[in-house]
Image 1: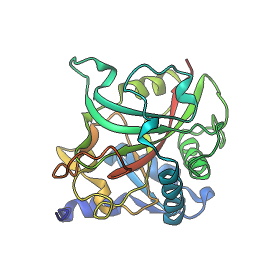
Image 2: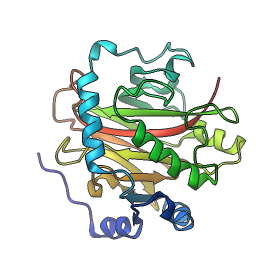
Image 3: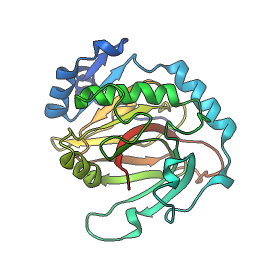
Length: 263
């Protein structure tokens, strides 16, 4: 099944918010923050590369076993600070209340003080430095340690073929942390799969000015997407025309370096 082409308006908007940056010290912080304020997202291309992502995907594939999946709930705060794999199915926090949202994905936690079993640590470091520059924090803030009560929840999300998704929502928890710590609230993700190759339908989106922006239709492997986490965003069903596949690393894959409170 072929992917649909984005509209000319979406292509134009994406190009307006695309920054080609090959050196970390050339990051146009003010312009990126302006894009987040006005258009709610930006794309950085060049800091993390396609070849690095392909190498990491191969390492993840070699290490992957569905037998390592932990259930949706029940893990301790300390477990997610280790190399920890889990499925997330159903309503967030298992509470079907107004403001809750549903999802289906697999998460691989890989904080940088753990063994680099997925060959992701250098990619995570690059992402963290971008995050910290945008937060006006020291370049290595909370990279390898807990600082100011915060730690980097470096992790990979896999949305499997056959219906992996995340319902449209706003990140209330991360926004609350940002407000408490006087930080800008945004999410930074690394594109680790190619729409049209790894999956055909669905993928990440944000909603702005009454339109849904499916940014991954225009992304390349290794792109960094930054979006305002207070805006509505989610993941459209990934290849719902196929049978659900939890046995392999099929579908959509992205990485995050969110700041979590240390509990």
